[in-house]
Amino acid sequence: MVKHNQNIIINSSIEKSWAFLIDLSRSLIFDRFFIRIELPSKYSINQEYIFAVKANYFFNTCNLNAEIIAAKAPSLISINFNDKNITINKKFMLSKIGDQTKFIYKFNADFESPIKHAFISPLIKLSCLNELRYIKKAMESSEFYPDKKINTVSGYK
Image 1: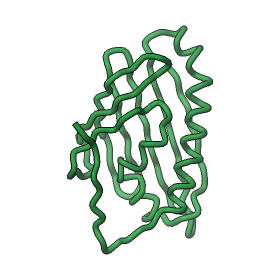
Image 2: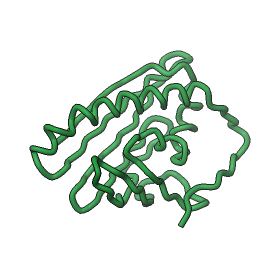
Image 3: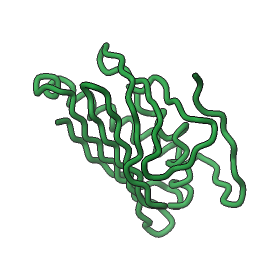
């Protein structure tokens, strides 16, 4: 099993950070192994929401079935990604610290064999660190309109 836990302070409110996280078309694109995230044009973040992700893990392209297993506004999103040989869980947790937000990122993955885990683990951890830094920058620079619904075009078939 490959595990990585990291936290960082975001210089934005918890509401702004949450708004960024629940827009899966923006928050998941920083995973360097994800090639395409397929979302229906209209979706809402709730438990048992299912979508597809195409990923490339070290020359192995796979079609991951993604499912939100927990969603609690504005503090938690947990997503499972599964394929026949890969199981991944990403957990994003937010907590308010004054006018800032503590962002906790937990990554757990099973790539089927201990040999793969030994090889992949350092690369996954480095990728998770980069993903966290990009998400931090994107959250801090994103715009937040609490009274306006923003429509996005997501996914393609």
